[in-house]
Amino acid sequence: MKKSFALMFSLVVLITSCKESTTEQAPNKTSSNYFPNSNGNNYFYSISVSDSSGVQSGTKKTYYDGDTTLLETPYQIEVDSFNINGIQSVNKSFFRKSDTGVFNYVDIDSNAFNSIIPDSIRGAISFDQEYRLLYQPFELYQTWPVYKVSVNYLSFQFDILTIDAKVLSKSTIDLTINNSAITKEVFIIRFTTKLTTDINQPPTTYEAKGWIAEGIGFIRWEGSSEIINFVSGRNVYLPGTYVIEELYSYKSL
Image 1 (cartoon, rainbow, N blue to C red):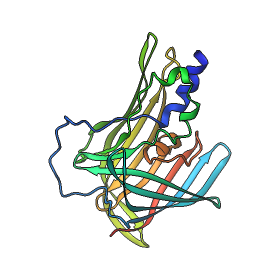
Image 2: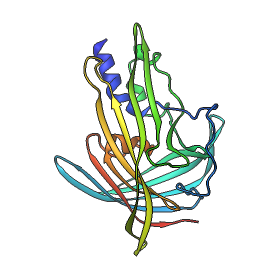
Image 3: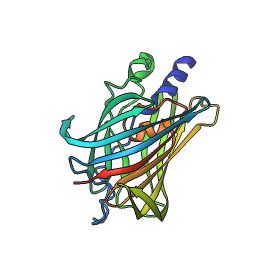
Image 4: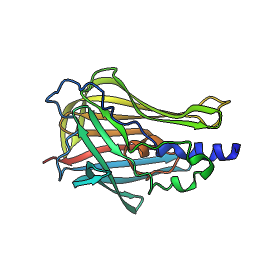
């Protein structure tokens, strides 16, 4: 049984979530738009992926491509095309935007990790269909729960996974985008994961940061691949790598 728990803990990081509360008081509406989501928007990022063996580089193109309905909930389709060291891949994810934030859909059935969770433990975990990527409107030092996984198994009840976000700072930075030098005000958001693989040991902590600018969206991601894979709704980067994604061009409709 101990092996089953260890296996499940090490693989569950991408497959459970925190929903939008139906009783949550909606924040005051704001005209600021930190997540433009018009269909046809295109974003181009340079990529750096590093570990002890070296550094790989590449590019990513993100665009929004229409709408769909999943579990009776409308979502927008995001398509990410990667080229890393000449290896190309395409990934689709699904999100929805509301007055309170941005929420990403989690497809439990097709998730590769789901099939190898031991049947003896599967019934002890409940899977939500969404996690909260962003809380809106942004405020300095604001925090919110992104994701939480709890297990009730025999006499055990505890959190094995928590992901939380905090707005660390607000600053003005110089950027080169679309071959032009611009100055933008950005929020820096830290995402922190705590994963418990052994209840007798302290949790393993992963961190990543996202830089987000009004009228553009995320202009930079940097940190642990485990978190960047999770918050972007894809499983592209290998575990244990350090990832930097930096926007160099975009087209917003």
